[in-house]
Length: 209
Image (cartoon, rainbow, N blue to C red; front, side, top):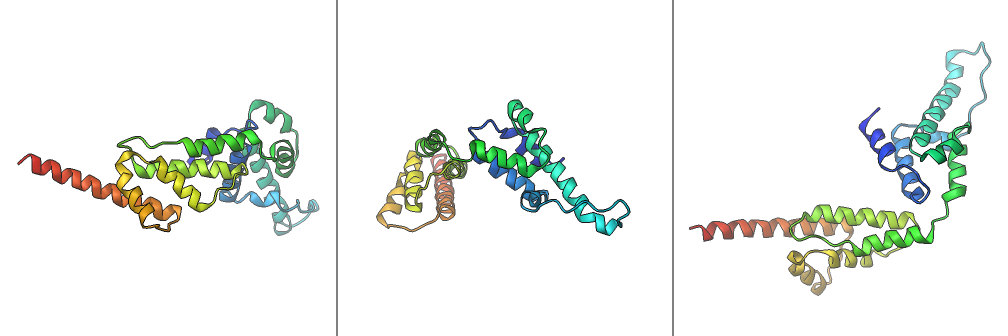
C-alpha cells in the first residue's frame, strides 16, 4: 500500500462533520488508484462459467475495483459509520448513503471553515510559503462546505494575515492596485521574503567589519 493511500486513510477519518473534505480526499484516492469508475459505471453482467478470459475481464475488473474502493471507504470511517455500511455490496451504495446523511453542507462547518480562513495570522519570522499554503487549505475547506469568497476578497484576507515583516509589500500592493491570483501572490511574497533575507544578511556582514 502506497504512502499516499495510508496518509489519506489515516489523517481524515470520516466522522460526519468532515464529510466534504473526506469525500474530496476519497475521490483523489480512487482516481489515483483507477477505481473511481465503480461510482459511475454499473457492474457488467456476470459472464457464464465457461466464458473466455477476455469475456470475463470487464466483470472481474469491476468486481476487484469495487472491493478495493469499499475497503478504502470503510477503513477511513469512524467505527460507527463503518459498522453501518460494511454490509453494503457496492462502493456506490456506500457513497450514496453518506451523501444522504452528510451531503448538505452544515452551517456550522461552513462558518468554522470561513472563520479559520479569516482568523489565521502569520507568525513573525515564519515561512510565508507555508503560511499562504495553510491559508489556501482553509479556503479550500470553506469552499467544500459551500462558502463562496471572490478572489479579490481572498487576496485581501491573506494580505491582512501577514506578519509586520510584509507591511511594505502590502502597502505597495494596495497602492499599485496590483491584480494577482493566489499563485502569483505567493510567488511575489516569496520573492519579497528572499530579498529581505538577503538584505538582512548583508547588513550583518557590514556591521561585523
